[in-house]
Length: 264
Image (tube, rainbow, N blue to C red; front, side):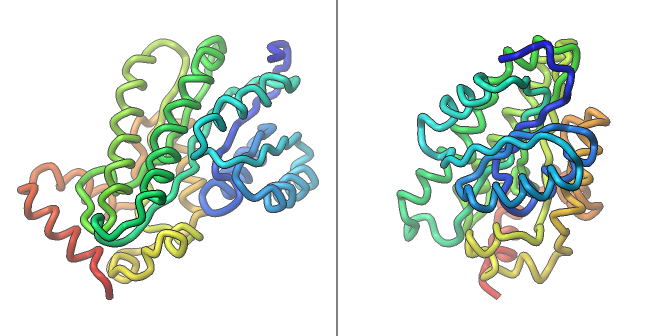
C-alpha cells in the first residue's frame, strides 16, 4: 500500500444504496477519494461515474458479498494493491430480517451474522494497523437504535447491532491517544431499501416513529465522526429513548419493543 499519497481516502461498505450511498456522496464532497463496495457492481459503477464527474475525485469499485468468509481479506488485498491508503473505514453493510426466530430461515440468519458482525470485525482488524500508522484516521461503524434493547420479531438483527455498538465503544477506548477515532452511528427508522429487504414494512415501527431520510443520517454521521463522538444517535426522540431505556425494567422494555414491532 502506497504511503506517500496525501489524498484522503475512505472505504465505504454497503455503498450501493441508502445510508452507504449517501455517505459516499458526503465523503466525496468533503474531498475524499473513495473505495466503494457492495454486491451490485452495476450500481457501484453508476455511483462511481456520478461522483467522479461531480467532485473530480477518484472512486475505486470492488463488488463482493461481504457475508462470504474470504471477502474481507480479498477486499483488503485489492486495496493494498492500489496506489492509495485508507484514512477512513466506514463499516455500513448490513441486513435484517423480520419475524419469529423459530420460523426464520437459518441461512438468512447466518448471512446476517456474517455480514453484520463477522465481516465488520474482520475488516476492522485488517485495516486497523494501517489506520494506526496515520497521524489521524477514522472508523465509523453503523449500528442502530436497535442496539439499546432486545428486539422481539427481529431478535438476531437487534443482537447484531448491540454487538456493533459494544465492539465500537470498546475499541474506541483501546485506541485512546492512538489517533484513530471510532464512532458508532445509531440511526433509528430510516427511509431506504433496508426496510423492504428485511420486511420491516410489516411492523408498526414505521408508523409510530418519525422516519429519517438516509441523506440526513449520512450528513449527521459524517459531522459526528469529525466531532469525534463515540456514539452518535440520530434524532431527539431516539436519543431520549436510548438514555431512558436502561432505567426501565427489562421486561417492560422488551414488551414495548414487541408491541412496536408487531404487524400493523
